[in-house]
Image (cartoon, rainbow, N blue to C red; front, side):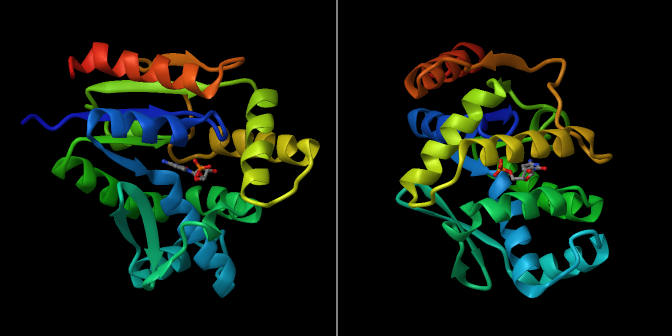
Length: 225
Ligand code: DC
């Protein structure tokens, strides 16, 4: 069977992971959350006091981390040194750490190699910031998923609340704006819409509407199912 790659990029909180995960399940593909890899490294760097501006130190840390991705009941889990950090990496302070470590070219090089390797071996729905332009430039389907800053902040507040973390809307909004700016202005692989990526703006959409829009586009484009 032909191996198919679906690449989804977009800013923080656009619903990428929830939608990409649902799409992967529907299509029988593997979901690869690349943000989790940057988050796991950000978590390790903050726990071990490694300078997040120091690319060499970060790539040394990454090389010794034994970062592993496993699928348990179809859900992606990420491990560092044998410890499942899938929940810890979702903490708000780790979002900023992930953004910082992701700006270092040495880090990106190592993680992109891992991501390409995963897509070579199986059909994937992979989400991130640089998937369409850099990680999988030959992907069968490319989508840029976005929504207004207010919508994204509202969704993030609700998501964190569900996980038992109370945060203010203003705080989350400011955090999202800062991360958008940093992700779009970094030197290596900044976030932008690839010229050949299909734009899906989910502002005002329910989650189901966002999922429908993405899944039907993938099916139409990849001629699957
Ligand atoms: O999607 P996320 O919020 O889990 O991503 C965390 C950080 O990692 C985000 O600030 C940008 C970075 N990232 C990246 O630079 N490239 C990717 N492919 C995925 C995430």
